[in-house]
Length: 292
Length: 292
Image 1 (cartoon, rainbow over the protein chains, first blue to last red):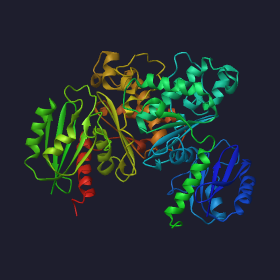
Image 2 (image 1 turned 30 degrees about the vertical axis):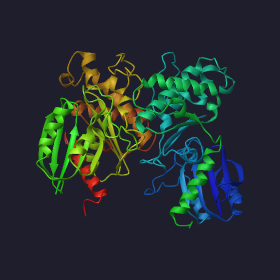
Image 3 (image 1 turned 90 degrees about the vertical axis):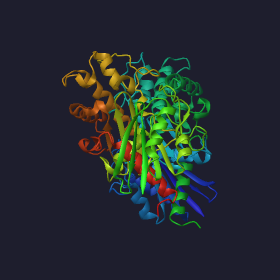
Image 4 (image 1 turned 60 degrees about the vertical axis):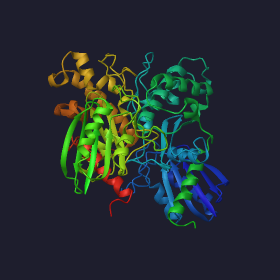
């Protein structure tokens, strides 16, 4: 019994097939070009399997309200050719099986909750800091869903006293993503994030913004765990700085778990999203009574 | 068949009894003094009725995790004598009936969702701006509950360019509550909020902060409706300024309902909390099978 999953990103599509123990038996990365080209390759990969269900965690924004026509669509994205593309519909037309459909970061949050850093918990936030900043949320063991999916990377933040950079976000300028995603590091310093020395003052500024976002998320969602993923977070010293800043900024307000337990690195590096998508696919099969 | 409810505030306790149509047949306001004195008066009021269930919406912070010993307690509050008081336990000891227990603002959000400004919706945020700033959240028709209840009044915000006031929050200084609750208006201008003229520049600053908070909440929770309550919000011009600022700050990012439909004033002035508490009490009776 096989399950399929796609972690759909703006640069590549990770496709995987797992058995009913959720052990991945086949995985491939397909470059994201045009929808037609990319889908053709996705079909070649999955056509070789008889799948019970599929889960898709996609880059966004995406339509997630089943009551709306936009459900299953990629919405306004800077990625050329993908705006208003019926991604889920195209997959469903090819494979007549139950599907789960959510954002890449929601899938990653779910993966970490079930098999990763938040195992045994019922709620978590997954925040990825890379080219952009995005977050997924699980509450009561289920993906959190409002009227749309969260866009928590774009919240506004209080300025660090020694930072006057205007920010990179085309919509908001100095929202969180504009001030703390990877490109802002290079824009401020002229040095690529991964080449910046540990003692560069920019890390203090970045930790200040990320910690502030975690504080605002905590005050709003009160999760049991916050999991940090993404390229920028590969800096171990940054995690420490964020924890320290978080404690300082919260100032003892509101009961939260011990900070080293509360704010952690991902436990499924680069795999949270695809594992979460597989698990969501399996859940979808269960809900539809496909698994007995 | 009668239901009871308490909207417990730091200055007064509103107690009400309603019939099974949720029509309030008796209501009283008791000054909040010591727990012992106040409870004695609450008992006098409710002892006259044979109640099926009760709902309590309380000032906080409060313990809301049934798995913890602090469940039902008032936690660290500036209100003298109430810290670590087992409020729910004291009520339960007197009345052996099903109880609902949540924050005052969560109860208000629930009241507005069921009978007020968010009627027919499944999610909303209720934000009160008065002496403090607090918010309640309903998602999928139920009160939103993380590891604790939301404390969204204390998120940090980007500074208004012409505001350098240090803020009134004893924990964070210039968090949202510190910069935009009633006392900050008077502290900056020397004039009581309700006496400030409509064209005073302070209103622009306040609208900027409140709108920013609504933007951050929207990006995180994506509710169908945001309802504004509380004394400061009695200024109609302020509501307009907030809507305008919200639209400007969001800058077209993320699909939200039309702003005049999305950000609205309460529909149950000063009654959202007590009505919500009554409804939650009735729900509790239903869940326990007390109503057939």
